[in-house]
Length: 445
Image 1: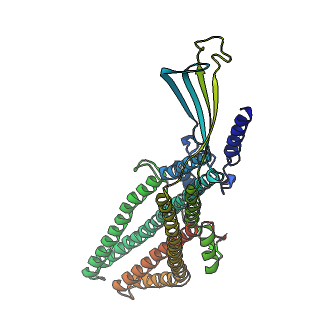
Image 2: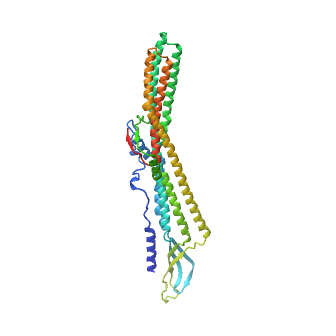
Image 3: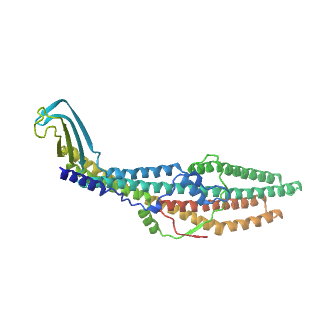
């Protein structure tokens, strides 16, 4: 009897303890030290830079918190999946006692432990591990998406601030020109039609200026939304964007996307999960073992002189379940195989979509870079020179006011296009980093 009990306890220990540790593929250094602490939120004042906004979002964004706690919940499932099922305790009371030679049976006590066949708990734990790994990569994907959203809005705010400065400068220039034209009109040098055109052009610029000012409110609301702040919470003005010079080849970016993109890594873990589920489903054909011990409480015999009178009985039990429903088990294996094929095809399609998106973003990045070089290095300096020459000629009466308006309008459009290209350049760079799952090598410029 003692031998059977020791064997039972040994099997329970081996099955429970051998696979109790969670072998996930997560680097502990990547774990956030604190996922929610309003005390550690950075102050978003006028000196706050992009890193301050990113830190604030990482600590306070509810979507990121939700992804993190989905992962922590999945981690808790690993030990559950590798644990033995609860032992079963049975109690029986003899309503009409059964008289035996040594006395009447009064109570029965039984404890039974089911032990899955070797490998089942390990497979269940591996499935739970792959689920946890997939959810960790999902957390990383949410974090990268959040950082991209913050950067995109941040660079949009920077564009609006710069565009407002440009518009204000041009409005002031037109006000000055209007005063010059008004003096000439009063002196009879300039026609009234030129003055009217100057006022119309000034009103158009003022309207564009007001539109840019109004646009700041919804963009700031977007930033507050991803930071999980009140919609009307103050957002400091973003200073001029510092452009980064980056170094990469197309092949390097595609390779980085395939190796580091957390969405692809998550779908790969889910594919491995379904593959392990096939092995687990096949083990349904193998019976599980049940070991038990029963104690029977026996009263004193009617004849007290009988040997072993009132001696209680112990019964050692062993059993197996009978997996005879082969149709159900076969369907479970077929289901697992179908889910694996689905996960495999999903990952292939996801890879194709992400690589296609990368190509589009690369084009947009190069387009922004080309416009930066075109407007910043060529067109804007020439437009500024042309405006200065035309303005001097207008003040001396050598050119018509319409020529000056055309020069001023061209210069304004080039200035705004340059600021738009600056913002687009950094926004597309942020999107590239989100897709490739890592920071792209940079050097300040």
